[in-house]
Length: 237
Image 1: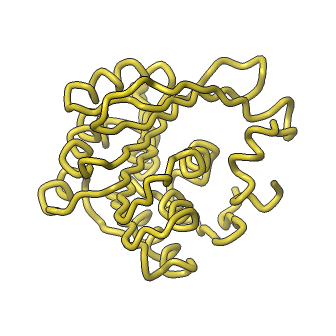
Image 2: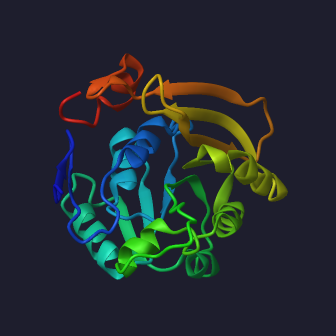
């Protein structure tokens, strides 16, 4: 496993993080809109900090705050932030999501989250990895509760989840007054099933803009759409 991941404008150390850099996080960081020029950003469950740094690269937000409950991941995220070109704009907090909601009075123009979403009944012997992987550490209800309380009135919330959870997540969000505005469904290759849904929410109701993305035509041959989305980040794109 590569413990250092180099992007075009920043580098991620990930040896202390249970969940390494993956396609999900990069997709979310690249796809999430910053067209509304967010000034304040919150990254829920930051892990390595990759999402925060991608957003820092893409916009001029003055404050990008990340929260991470796992102590090793928190330390690594803080280190990745300090070593980035945007060290003066990115901040990491060692806290649970509900602790953060209780303590913070601010609202955020953009909230991003690549949540743990493995709800299988087994656990491994690696507590950090379990914490990162299993959604009992951060139930969808907690995420939506936090977003409903922390999102600014004109803000955007962006998340990536398994496609099988899409309808359930949208329904939960609706109960808190959050409307799905944009959905991207992702499959690995033309023959594989759709695995992921990227969804953007706001407090404003409008028709949902739906689209689809295929990552590869075949192994390591990426689609033009995927290249266009990620080429500002991946070294080899």
